[in-house]
Image 1 (cartoon, rainbow, N blue to C red):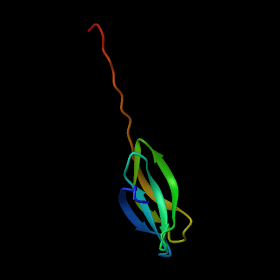
Image 2: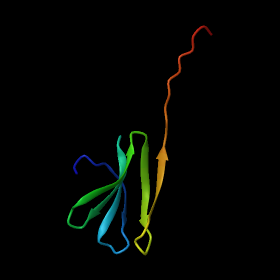
Image 3: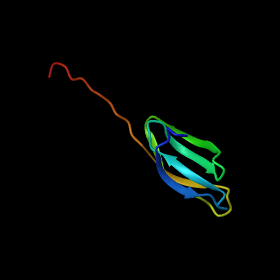
Image 4: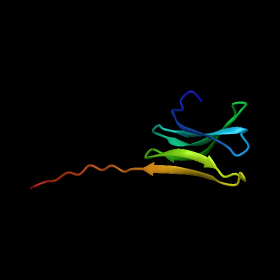
Length: 79
């Protein structure tokens, strides 16, 4: 889809698809076959992004890195 901001790309084990990590407010991990059909595998939500997708040689697993963060605002009174 046009709204995807691609962060990282890897191939699946048999070379029939790409594994794409997305860097956006709703980052995730997707599989895109060579015909252009995409499938979202993992949605990261608003505070995470994924990187370095690698499929194992037997095609049973995908390894990837994930980073997340939280933010807070604190108000101090009467200091």
